[in-house]
Length: 200
Figure 1: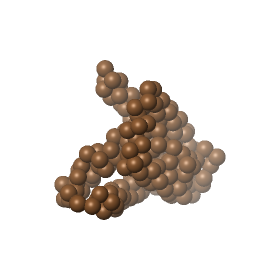
Figure 2: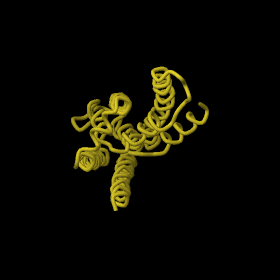
Figure 3: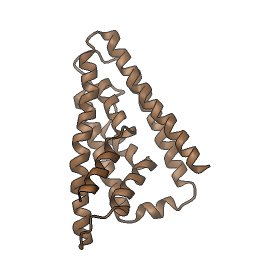
Figure 4: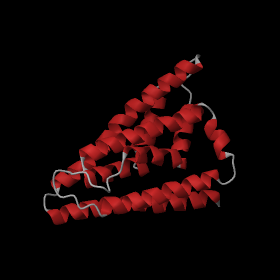
């Protein structure tokens, strides 16, 4: 079980689209929007894990073109989100704007992100805890994964918001938002390159 916890932690602590987008949302829009987006990511992550456990992921990705479609949707949304973060003009008080990401967008990101299925597949199917009861093992995995996932994502949200708080001048806040948006867009580019190399 110790090995499983360590592997789970390492797989989730590495910066990826979910945590970087969360940090960007925190920097651009503050706690209120950030928490709602985090809840969306949480529901989406557990939804994907449930699909993996039920075997739906294997069926879904055997259909020609589905994985590529999900990849395009995921990268397109992340590109759009990076633009929204980079152009956020919130000054103080973290007032929610019409451009602020919603809870359902966090859910959407996880469901169309092929990497989410890979990670959850590894944690819930490939790795074993050695528990005789399948139901108990799956429940234990959900508890372990979420106990690691929640604090890691709260930390990234706090980090994004802290970057905004540390940058009191409005011109610095703009550059923090642009930097977070650019970092997220860099993830989009790297993800696309890695996926193309995998296919080749």
